[in-house]
Image: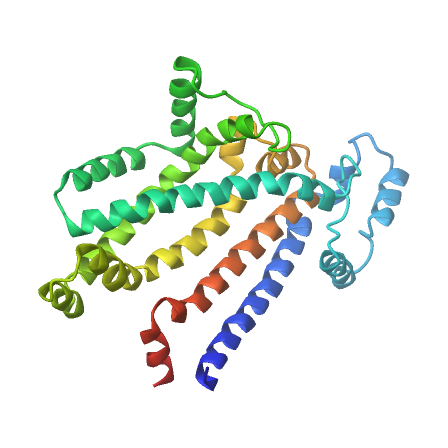
Length: 321
């Protein structure tokens, strides 16, 4: 691998760390930008001035901002996000307990969305106007017109309440009952995946239709290559740049944005933890979840940027010419 490719990758990593630093600064300042003082979230309204002063000293709120930032960042680098204002429990422990639920939900939704969107998008581009294309277009229009929370409630009503095929709400750990765990994941995963299916299918279909008109694909058709080879080896890989880019953004967004679905289905993930923290003004918990979501988002985008040369060798040739 030559120096140009290494410089490109080093630049991507450098941008990642620069953006990560700016994110930590912005997230830290959240605590100072909220109305009032953080002490207001720690103590009840009837607290005495002495109690307020003691709380401010205990949490280091009297220190200069730069010192508080360095102390906070040092704790983050050691995996310590501080302690909840309301419960006194370690925020890191709460995140470790709840993060697997949100991650599992987001990853499964992503897998389902890609598993549906790739074959549908490819075939719709190859056979526009076919039954698959018409049905997918109708489903896309219907999904676009239905907000996620409405879709979730509708799925619960149909499959849980009316048909009784699936449980309504709640969570069962995989270690306790694998079958029940999977059942309780189906509806929230479908709710999350539906919106991403629309995005992925439309994106891939548009790119595939353009790729199928290019000379190397037309030449492959003229040589009589099998349709499967034309669609996968000659078209799909080249058409996947936009899909990979958006997928990186989406997986980061899903992990940090499962709040609504977790609330609808009563799942004990980071989303419900954030809702509870906001309601109780436990801002240090909100701060930690926002930071983690931003780290995941930046990491996925950096990995996507580094993966482009692996998808198409022509990218390496262009960048090294």
